[in-house]
Length: 464
Image (cartoon, rainbow, N blue to C red; front, side):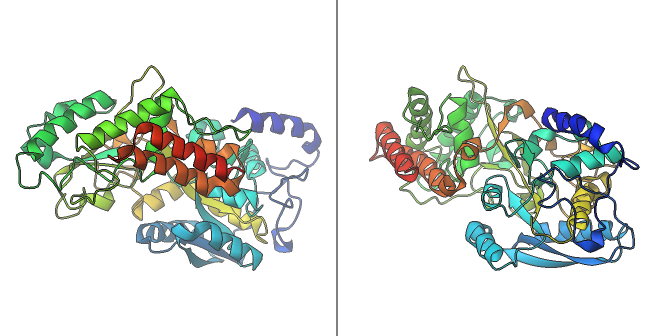
C-alpha cells in the first residue's frame, strides 16, 4: 500500500477500533445522502457497505462520439448490476476538446454527473474546482474489508497519474502508454530488417530504420508527399514531453521558474529538426499526404487500443506494435503515459453507490467486462497482465500481436507531470507553448534558438 495511505491507516486504527465492524466503519445510512462529507476529505470515516437491494440512479459522464468507451461502460454496468440490480444509470456526454469549459459550466449549474470521465491532464481542472473528491479513505476502507490490497493488486504508478499531493482523485480504467504502431508490409517492401523492431529498441535503431525507409520512398512517385512517421512529434504532449525529459530538459518548476532554455532542450529540438530536414517527419509548414491509418506511412506513435487500427482494410494482417523507442542520451529514457478513467463528483448524493461502481471497475470481473466491451488495453490489475491467458480478456482477438509493448518499461513511463506543479489555470497555455516549440523546430525558416526563445516567452507570459 502507498506509504502515505498506510501511515494514515495506522494512525486512524486506534480511533476506529471501537467502531470497526467487518473491516468497515458505517457512519451514515447511504439512504441519507452519502458518507464522509467531501469524500472523506476530513476526519470522518467512510463506509463501503451497501445493501444489495439498494435503489438509486447514478449519472455518468463519458466522452461524446467514443463508441468504444460507451460499449465498455455498458458491459461494466451489466456486471455491476449483477451485484446491485436496483441501481440504474443515466449517461451524459462530453466533448473532450471542450472538457474544461463544459465541466465548469455543469458544476456551476449543479448538473455535473455523479461519476465523471477524465484523464491525466484534465483531472487537474476537476481538482482545482473542488469538483471531485479524494478517494484515499475509500481505498483504506476496502483494504480493511479485505476487498483488495492496493499495492499488491494494482499497477499503482497509473493511479499516481490521477493523484495530486498524495490524494487519489481519478482512477484509471486501464494502462495507457504511448507505443509504436508499425506496418510490416510497407517496411518489408522497403527492405527493412524487421528483427530490429522489438521491445526496448533504441531511438538510434529507429532512426536507422527511418533512413532505410526514406531512401526507399525517394525511389517512388510519392517521394515528395509521403513520410515515415504519421503525425509529427509536435502534435501531442505525450510524445514530445517525454522526448524532452529523455534529454534532461524541463519546462517549469513549482515556483513558476521557466526552465526550457537549456542545452538539453536544444539538443532535443536539434534531433527533431534533423528528422524534418531528412523528411522522416513532416515539417510544420508542410501538409502531409500519408498516414498510418491509410496504409501510406509505416509508423505511428499512439496509446490507443490495437482494435482501433487492426481491422482496417489497409492494415489487417500487416500491422503490429512495439515499445516506444528509447532515447539513450546519458539520462533515463522516458515513455509517455497517462490515464483515462473515472472519478466521483464531490457533490454526489450517492457517494457509496458511486464508489462501489468504481470498485467494480477495478475488480477482475469489471476489468474483464470492459475488455469484452472492446477495451483492448492492459488491465491496471497485476493479476491480469498476461494477455495470453484465456482468463485475461483484454488481449481479445489480438493475442498474436506484440501486446507486451504496452506494458514494457514501466520504470520509464511518465505523464505530463510538469502540469501538476503549477496552478491548473496555466495548463492549456503551457501545453500549447511546449507543442509549438516542437513545431517551430521543424520549420525551415526557424532555428532551434528561435523555437526555444519563443517558447520561453510564451511560458513566462502564461505564468504571469
